[in-house]
Length: 288
Image (cartoon, rainbow, N blue to C red; front, side):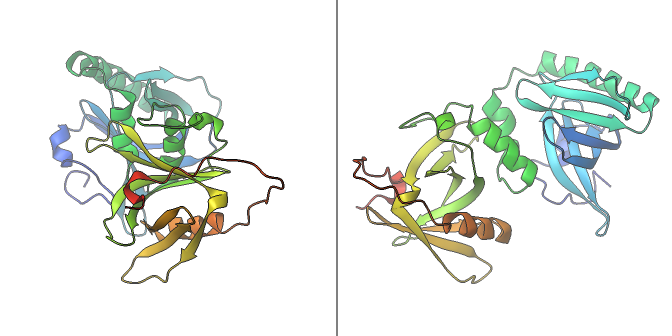
């Protein structure tokens, strides 16, 4: 079924290109430092570990991630709550995997270690950007948003200006969007990140290996206007005194609703006179 039936949300090249299935089984997975538990179906290929969930109502698999074995480690955990092992790597958030039996855990650890060794011998080391951005974008699931936030606040960002990103406060919300100047309607893919005082626009290169800063807007200098959904599009407009209006197109109604909620919240008014540089408007949208 995995090799023949379509997998909902599957990205990249055909699944058969990853080689023969070494082993697969049902398990429960938890990402470190979260309470989220995911019943999943693990599929081991010679160089990758595929994570799927099951839509029982539609009787189909849902794509949850594809992890490269190169650089990964598999460690047996002593747990009183199940037969658990942990997979981790330099570019992979540690995950605890609970098997249905002790023998099944032993099989997984043995198979993973064998193929990790083969992957390290045949694959050159990959950079964090290659190993994670290609799996997290488009950022259309909660676990992807969480891991993308964790990555963006620690990775180098090209053309970054101003104070360091990790000094801008906690990330309130993040999603991938399409943004366009309202005059020429030339939509481009962006990662939009909301901080307590700023709205940051980022992009990635065509190979999804680099993050590039495209602009920052202070929240006290902008406001948004909702637009009705038409032709299945969820979009709103950002306007400000020192910028041309921008159209933001969300990829899901959930993202649209959350952006409207967060960006329409009233901001505190600071008393007194302060001098600030003009907002750094995203490069594609500066007034010509």
